[in-house]
Length: 276
Image 1 (cartoon, rainbow, N blue to C red):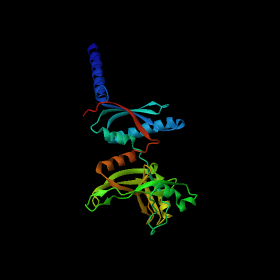
Image 2: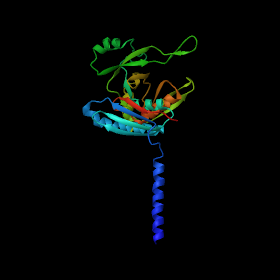
Image 3: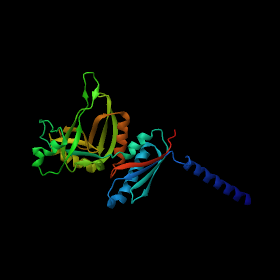
């Protein structure tokens, strides 16, 4: 009986040790430690901390990163991200701090077939006669159309234009069900296809049915990425264009699926040395 008890005890220690090694298969110190700060007003900071930790954790899990996210100080809005292993720290930091804010909103313009109204400057958009006399809540946002092709065949960024969109948006990232990158063989680039949940699809379907031939903007992080007029009722699918590379499309889809940050986040300190 004594021998059996000793064996059981030893076996228990062995199993615990094995489980501990599996769980803690990391170096003693993280490869990199990032301290983030939420740019949020004090009265919303605690709730913002909880949502930000959850969102960043979801993003890093989807990326397959070996990292931990912990709140440090609600009063100061500080969060620590411990990175235990990475080969592309720059990409990881971009994914952590990306706003991930997607909106689809009505462009304040004459309907198709009139061309969508854009303006050369933000001031011109805000001071236009239509906006001065219009009580509809609105925002003035930058819009970069597709790149222009030069005589040599290379692409150069098109000039920034400005558009006026209604506020609030028709739908936003909270209505998103999924997002995925899709190769565009005609343009030799990628776009992001997204679908809406049941509630978002109902709102979007009702709005588009009532606004045939009017212009709709896809807005990402307060920048208009594409504009189209409504040909017919649209239910639960859309796309974001903009000359994305494969990786940037994958990263954007990951960020959108993981949810947007409630407030901007900035990296205020960084320690450790990157190891491969």
